[in-house]
Length: 539
Image (cartoon, rainbow, N blue to C red; front, side, top):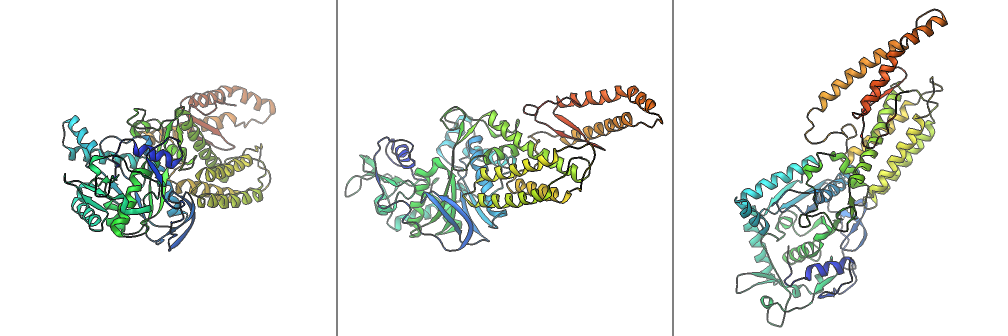
């Protein structure tokens, strides 16, 4: 990363570039219209159109090879715990990576850089009275554990700054040799922005104008050149991927100066016209009701570990999918509970559909022709949405609409089976719904697990036995073998306390988040979200 010399230049340029404020800053427009200089790469067309920050439009995503598409993901500076704002970006891009791989057949080779030496690390290590190396190692491992808990797939390879210092120095020397950087008398090295001409500003569309910086003097007048820092030189991208990178991703706040300077350095080193083909930027996670992003500096953050004590990683993934990866997203307990309720609804449908397939759920005649058509329509709608800049909100809506139509058929209750059964169509719908969620890393079967829940298997076994015992009691209470009508009525009257006890147990378990459903010949159960599910008394 290159950091501009001159107070306020970075934020002002960022606001001007992304249209967030009309404030005045020391900047000028880069010559030429945005996106006109972009070169559409040759290679494998994935079938996806992606919003490219280089062009500010949706471009066909064409990668060098379907077997090895290169992707660089900005990694953490490991000086503290990761928080939910970080998690949102990593989960969103993990979902995109899974979609590219599993829906569009594109194998991703992903590199993530780990900044394990930095001023922040040195300061924090001094505060904690430990070495910078041990602090960085501690928080790197902490970050990896958090990502695993969120079900974020690990990159193909991690690259640490400390393991590549000689290569980084060679990279800087190459930029100097190519005439795009120069050393100062103080031993610093500055990147020469003017040597780039109008090629600087590909992402933000503006470049700094000259300001009075004593340490940026060079023959010919004032300069706004910027220091090449060992910890911010994009060696890892060039070391593995060379002069061409398919995809680069990170948070929108990194577009300038971080990503802008990566482009400048890599193109200067490789002497190429276009180093990165597609730049993807994710929106911020905001604290609902505020316009500020979640960050450590604002002290409004929630650590990933604390979050996972309350909600599962599956719920967080669905929360992230309910908005475009490019948009800001509001976090609150209410929005998380909405996502959890949606996930519970999908899981409940899958359970009911399976019960119907096994003959445990009695309902009216099923319009299987309607459901087959709806399934076909959903598959097409989901594929089209994902191909349109990974439109996960539209894809989720299409799947939940399919669930809604399936539920309408299953909820048409009847006292006795009537008409032909249609297990095949429900089997296909269940398979597709589960496959959709599994594609993006969500498990419907494990939707209630949270970090540290080691007793879940034991709980299931105990509840299974309890429900089976209750079923036997209920079946005995309902069985009437007496010969006369009066005798049968007397039997039912005598056994009424047993039925009432079964209903009381069912109601009591709801308070503990367990719902029992009595079907024609059996009983099933599921876990509920106690804060969002309706409390229905036993009938």
